[in-house]
Length: 185
Image 1 (cartoon, rainbow, N blue to C red):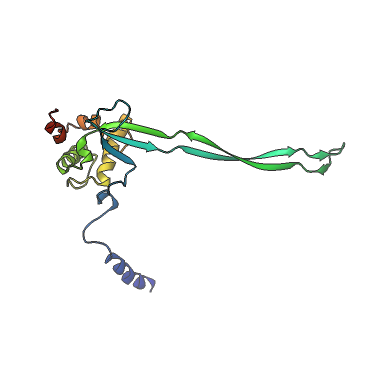
Image 2 (cartoon, rainbow, N blue to C red):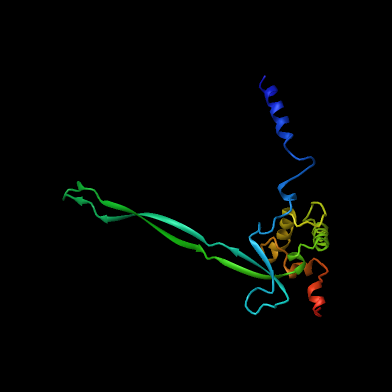
């Protein structure tokens, strides 16, 4: 009899979901949601002011170690019986296991502007390599970012933001209209 009560409950819950197939990876990212920040002209020391950079910060990993430290040894008789037990205190210490890291890398400026045509090309390039299986819609979704990370991680950059070097390896056409309007390449 119990399954009969579950069916109406499941039907009620399914009515709360939007129509069509949705997942957390299909939702577009909201600006500022990622731990990576992309900016033009602001970057590492000696940064090219016309280039775009991403900064990714990895927090430090801190470990707390607690030890029992003897502050008074036990008082023993000559035959080994304990007159007074040892006295211990707990001491906790924190140590840095891994330092905080900041990584700067150059990115295509189209990523900063969330250029739909560029992101569509990115999704196609990642799909051609078997890394992206989502919709080709020009939106930088979590699924797209996961595919970018999967492409770059073997090369030493574990980031969801596409680096300029990775964009070139993917064969993406890069053009910066602001730079072109200013007379640059």
